[in-house]
Amino acid sequence: MRVLLTGHQGYLGSVMVPVLHTRGHDVVGLDSGLFARCVLGPAPADPPSFDVDLRDVTEQHLCGFDAVIHLAALSNDPLGSLAPDITYEINHRASVRLARLAKQAGVRRFLYASTCSVYGSAGNELVTESAPLRPLTPYAESKVRVEEDVAALADSGFSPVFLRNATAFGFSPRLRADIVLNNLVGTAMLTGTVRVLSDGTPWRPLVHAQDIATAFACALTAPVDRIHCVAYNVGTETNNVTVAQIAEAAAAAVPGSQVLITGETGADPRSYRVDFSAIRTAFEDFVPRWSIVDGAAELYDRCTRWGLTDVLFTQRFTRLAHLQQLERAGVLDESLRFQRVGAGHE
Image (cartoon, rainbow, N blue to C red; front, side, top):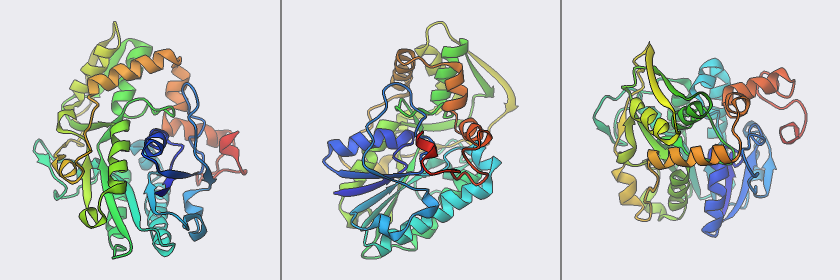
């Protein structure tokens, strides 16, 4: 299958490309390069690609593909809160426009990377895909809007599916340090303390980047009539854990580190546990393999091997800080567009 993968130079995309290649797919990337240089260790082998901002995609970019996997987004709650207009411009409007152009170009399948954070504050009960959507941030709100608008495009020739990923974790050659387990493992390595600012009680569903890639690969080849315009939670119930439990896993992976729960920011309203039975039923070959304990150990091993430093952790691998650094250097303008062609790849 010929697949266009947006965001192939991101945290998830860099893991997904080899998974798709292993399954025999012909992958072409599409990325503006915002995070192309956020590499720890050997650089990944990128596929042939379009170097283009999501907002500038044309129908010509989409011709000849059997499917689009749409990962590209400003994937960070602090960034979304700082620049909500840009978040909606890229994550919502440009994403819906991409789907519309894909349909016009004759693309049959459209796989959209949504998020379990669309459930917002759902309490202690396991939430299924039919639960009310209560997004609490611009990032989550943009995901809800895309699901609604892209679903309206669905017909016999255009089949979207919405994969609501749990919070990702695990090593990627293009690392992120601003997602919870990755952040806590890195903090433990660099400071000796796993510092939790909330009270540690909120629930979070977590899923390894490799398991997310597997879910998308399964959805790519599932019978269209079975998954047409359906949303699936992506993850496993065993990784429904509290923030305090995540902190304990991080500390256990890093020798000599300890957990400190300060509670200074109080209880986080984002708390939800998720039911993942639907995706297991739909995709029999989707078997999540990564626990948070295994993921924490993997992160410690790779970050030790490839020399994670405080500067890399706080600047290169933290989305908001990285983009602010590019803006200060004059590489990006205030709309997060590159000031010169190819600037993201220098």
